[in-house]
Image (cartoon, rainbow, N blue to C red; front, side):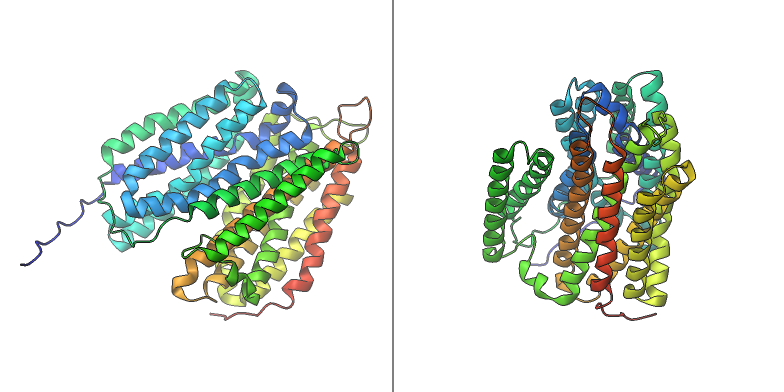
Length: 466
């Protein structure tokens, strides 16, 4: 008995691609509204600098955990179906953030918004099923570009909206757009049939334990600022963190299909790439948190006392540099090899951070430093992803890149929380203004860490030039 031929998938219309692009713009703008308005949120919600750092990174941490699940479920159950569920979760998160009266509720909203990180792989799944290869590549490029463009929109409009209306509306407006575009996308997007299951199970125990590791790590860094005056809670969190790490390692070593294959870390190319990625992302997150705080603060001889609108404009060149870093990194990696690009980006990161530690009295110094940090991050991550992906077997690519992804998130969490903890610890008694020494120390530690990382970079393989 012969199997009847399978009907070809319905071709996606240009209107459907445009709807996905609009959805990417709306999600990108919602994702980026916190960065320029973080000092305002800290004042209105009475947050410490450490709590502000937590708010600044929690969306990225959640997204890193959601992305592999979203991709797996999209392959198994259909990209459109999972994408619609994901946008509903993001919309719930945006509305929660919009009405949040305090930090705990706002954190819940940001956690739910973190689901948006999984939207890009789901859009890729749908596009590849319903468009020829050439058109699919163009559509994927458009959607990816619109996601970055949306983040620039968020940087520009978040401040004016928060100042003229309120902080609630800077979350509400992009969320309303997401809801409207989701309904349009649901109508225009053709349904994709569920894929054949490969029989593998998602590593739920490993994923839950990794979530515990990251959450406990953030709480530990929050308590680090008061470790001298209140050592017991800090010690307890260290013990809990050690327990989570031990449990996660044990589970991943026994899992038949682990989310993170720890045995791969024994390979020099992988562990060296992880070290460099961690350091670069630590510096990036440190700068991403400290720069808006420095622009907002108005201290005695330091700081600028700028509004959220002005902060957004100053952060914009960094967003542009981050956008250009991907294609520039790809060209540079093919021509000079991954080690050369990693060396250049690590030097750039160290120079930018150490430069900000020494010179941060003029707007142009801060703007240039932030743009250099963003460019260095994009160049290095591109080189590391390429180096790892080309150094492992084809069937190990997903596992290897997931290790880099988790390393990026961990480095970002440590960098952001380090900046917040240093500012909190160095607020002078009876003052609410962050001390300049906190900024200098944060930039200096991250810069020296990047400089020391060059000893690892110089031992990496040169790679193959095109």
